[in-house]
Image (tube, rainbow, N blue to C red; front, side, top):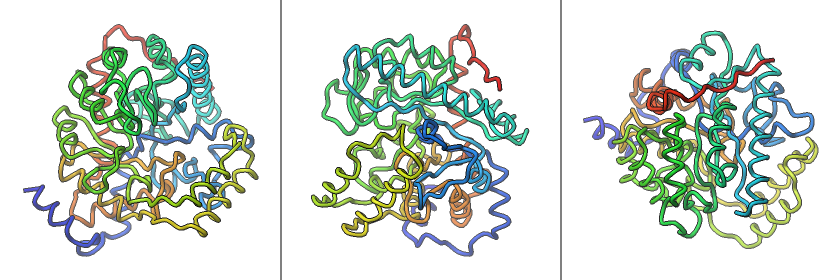
Length: 409
């Protein structure tokens, strides 16, 4: 019956009936544990003069997540990602990736330690809920791309001890663990080392994240994992056919294993993007030589202004908040309300018209309520489902696994 109701709603205009009272919608939002499973914000932690405590402007510097806007958007916390882009699969490349991953993990821990009155590093759902009860924003740590540990899976335990509770094997390119959704098949899914990654993640109680992995890699991870897995920031292919998006068949497999898809808001995965040679060339020129780790505030402003100029000269279709809702509602229809969540993919390229930083999160709550979903449903989408997957993964872990090293200020 629920699927039939959602199917009717999908065919209707986005606003169904009267919009909920803003105060009521905000109260529902505040009662939920609101988390995003993929913040790329840690990439900003090395920028000179940048602080998570400062209020930034997405229109000026492109930044989408900071403490003041988390408060405004009613965001309780999220998974702050250690992202290391795929490089050479050589001993030197692997060592450099390992070191970069360790540095980023330390930066996240230092961010929390520097602001102990407002942030808390957490590794369990109970700790996250306790942080909220204590008036703090919680910080989970995740790892996007297995490049830092692909050469030595024992490093997974090192990162787990530092606080990492979620890991994905691959990103835009294949690596020693798995095929990427956006690269040519190399392993036909997971390599033997990739299968060992699944087993070790289960042993450590680490949630396996299949976003960016190929369809075959996803199916094999679902089949091999003892615990449910997550897609931390993915769209649905039935709404827009892109290899980064998940098929309905795989959504059903994911849900049957208890997993969750966290619907993202990445423009290129929401609506078709025409290829414009001049635009691509201008964008390549703009990005050439940029070192994001050393970028100054002035450099960031110049970059954002340059992107706006390119958009004005060679415009391409922009996804809108309604497109995000189409993906979200379709995922709910196919997988069920217990298997869907949200991620903006903010500070990592995400953001669409009408939904471009964390202050916009209450719009999701209001839109779901307007479509007849209950406060309990909203709470599942905003954090309940993701935390359930974390609980399941940790419940199945080897009881001898040591906990993460606590942060001290």
